[in-house]
Amino acid sequence: MDLQDLQKLSFDYALVTGIGRFLVKGPVIESGEYKDVNTMVSALDKLYSSGKVRMVLDVTKTQAFERGSTAAMLFFKLFVGATPISDIQLRYKGNFRAAPNFLATATKEFKGLLKR
Image (cartoon, rainbow, N blue to C red):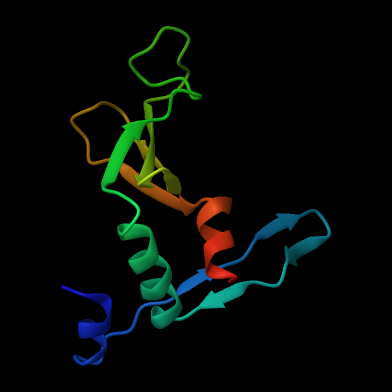
């Protein structure tokens, strides 16, 4: 389903980014950014015309199945055309039969497209 179609069903999507951490002196929260669904759709539409979506193993990271790995984690990069849009981590707790945690972060390249 298209993100804009979801708005018709009273469902909205936004990209909200920010950084916070808890130090000895207390929480430190930096200002965040908000990008609405129309900004996201516009950026993605431009990207989709540049090439296909593909997800590949991140060769710059040590994968869980490689020698020297210290955690049961798999690392991927999500591309549209030649543009990396998301870094993805799958972290398995205990063993590979357990349900993994999933973390996806927007790349600086994708965030740059949203500022235009």
